[in-house]
Amino acid sequence: MRPIKQNIVNIEMKKKIEPGFDLKAAVLSVLKWEKKQGLEINLVLVDNKYIKEINLEYRLKNRITDVISFESPEGGDIFISADRAKEQAREYGASFDEEMCRLLIHGTLHVLGYDHIKKDDEKNMKPKEKKYFKAVMGAGQ
Image (tube, rainbow, N blue to C red; front, side, top):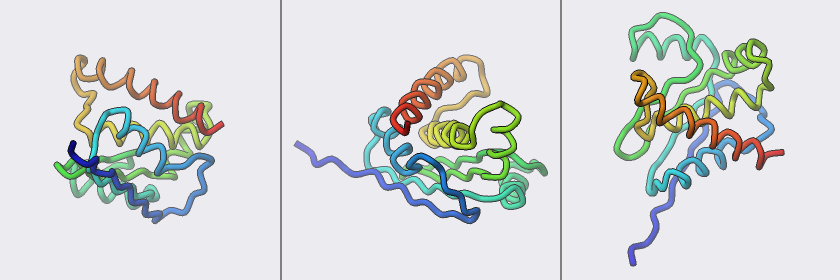
């Protein structure tokens, strides 16, 4: 029997926030539900200025976005704008924690290779987002 390789989640807060749920546990849960092992995920919480710079440098889009993910064979990086999450929470009538959780799950699924550009891909990704969101937010309450 092969030993199980642990997943690692590193969190860097360039924008200090205090969410009402465990960010690391949420990412680890998604990796477990997706049956992924031995991955290292770097989660970086940033402000709007920082994510706009990343979006311009790597995606050639000179605008603020909410989440950007970079996939690699070993795991990947997720950048979330806490500022944008706060703005979108107000826009959507959600709490900050709900929006952060949604973005975190969305970014994690992108790191795992999911996409939503094509309709068929979106049909696969969206139900997982909703299911995992309910599981994480339900556990955090």
